[in-house]
Image 1 (cartoon, rainbow, N blue to C red):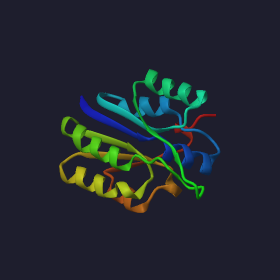
Image 2 (cartoon, rainbow, N blue to C red):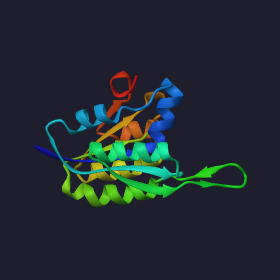
Image 3 (cartoon, one colour):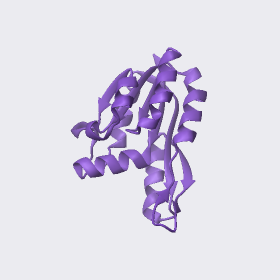
Amino acid sequence: MKNVVLLVDVQNVYYTTRQTYGRNFDYNAFWSRATADRQVVKAIAYATERGDQKQREFQNILRAIGFEVKLKNFIQRSDGSAKGDWDVGITIDAMEYAAAADVVVLVSGDGDFDLLVNKLVEKGKVVEVYGVPKLTAASLINAASVFIPIENGLLLG
């Protein structure tokens, strides 16, 4: 049985599935697929904290599935832009937990992760990237050992 680490960029998957399909990502279906015949070393969902009740309920669902939920405060700038990304945190955790894993699963379409994925592959790790095909950076798809498109079987509704 292979050891697996799951790292989910919650904001990225939320916005890309909503924009492309008008639907939400199915975390239960993902968990079943990504962990089949594998031992979970670590599973982390990275999200932003906005302080509303619905979001807290969603975070509790993620915890019930098996994820550790890491939160970063959502920052709304005076110019209307927002900040709350987890790129550095995901990268640090990936490098740390990959040592105990055969497979690293990253759920994100963010091309900034191509360097991380390349480094993990260099170190002999299998890296599966789940992303919405038309909104996942080509560099990330090309860096991955396996690219798994987020489509109907991984969507709610």
